[in-house]
Length: 309
Image (cartoon, rainbow, N blue to C red; front, side):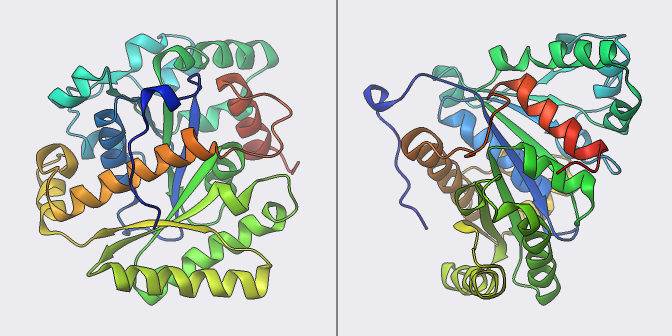
């Protein structure tokens, strides 16, 4: 795992929006928990984060985050009845995050993204213009995508700068994680997608760093042997009782227990991501359409609703 360091201000390049998708091969591996916790950990490093519920079929991130009766979601933005500021839910963050101007906002999901397929050019342009406002509101856009290998999940990986693939030590989870890598590999290893750097592996619910390393190595070796490349192993999150309690109470475990074993692991992941994104400056190798929000959603719409690769 990469050593966790905090960048000095003098070393920080000019800010730009980073897009990050989080997905898994199967449900129940803690993907949404990590997406939410990572958002608040990045805020503690002074980053502005917008978290998008990008699960097209089972959007429930608002419940996990303790948002009761969210009035609007992305479908209202698509139909043009509400603007971005009306839809975003802003969370209270830690004192450290506030001092560093960090923050977390949620863009609630639903089935709304499926409606993009039916938009005409004028409506699509209106949607892209609305979403481009995120570029002034966030340093990191984190999308909690779904599980599995269908297009609705993989499209977020193709459109994002970085993808975190979440797995656990369970054999079924390991197998399904490899299935995601294999599905991405049809295009990933051809250079159109910087998978060698953009696809990263996080092992969740482990009892030790050694167990996490062994799981990651199994997946990496299989990927290298049969696909010719392998994801980067970013890190792990320890199994922790505070997570189950937080889920039951509809709270984010990193907000309530940042110094728990799992909380420290998530903070390490956030630090490593910052080093990669703003130090080594990991990026897609082929972003001919640009790097802003408009370009991201154009890539997403193209891969999500057409057969074009």
